[in-house]
Amino acid sequence: MKIIGVLLTFFKLFVFVLFLAHVLGCIFHYASREESNSWLGDNENADWQIRYIYSLYWGIATMTTVGYGDISPLTTTERGLGIILLLVACGGFAFTMNSIGFALSTLEERTNVRKSKINILNKYMK
Image (cartoon, rainbow, N blue to C red; front, side, top):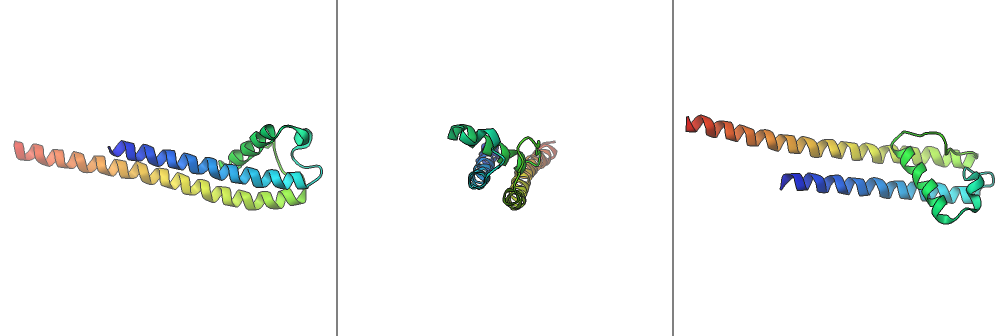
């Protein structure tokens, strides 16, 4: 039952990361649509699904601090917005990693308590 709780926590954190990347990508995409010579480049007139995937990809690459560099802000507005979104993304990702660590340590603590109780029971039975 405890493992299910940890898995549920991981799933919620995964959804949180995807949602935050979605929001960041949408904001970055909107900024690019308002600018000329934006990061969208040749994809400016592509279908919205393609532009969305590019924006989501940028959001996830930024949030996880991988930042491949293939999509980067070109205008001053995009760079300023990128700075703000990067700080928000790093905070959200740090929160997520901390939550994962806490969930794993809670699971480890419960396992250690269970082992301790078994050891006490074994000593009593001897």
